[in-house]
Length: 69
Image 1 (cartoon, rainbow, N blue to C red):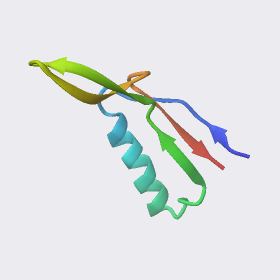
Image 2 (spheres, one colour):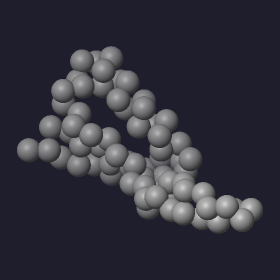
Image 3 (cartoon, rainbow, N blue to C red):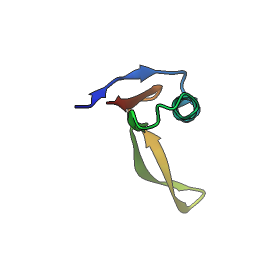
């Protein structure tokens, strides 16, 4: 059974912390124990300078969820 954890990070550094967790798990040989590390985002279409631009927006800034076995 997996356990989910919520981790708070500085806003704008969510992906760097995600990469750090995955690289440390690999370095320690625990990559089989980490199921997923997710940053909750959604696709948003905005109009900038008269053009439609699709970007990712975070649901909960400064938060991401890793899942451990």
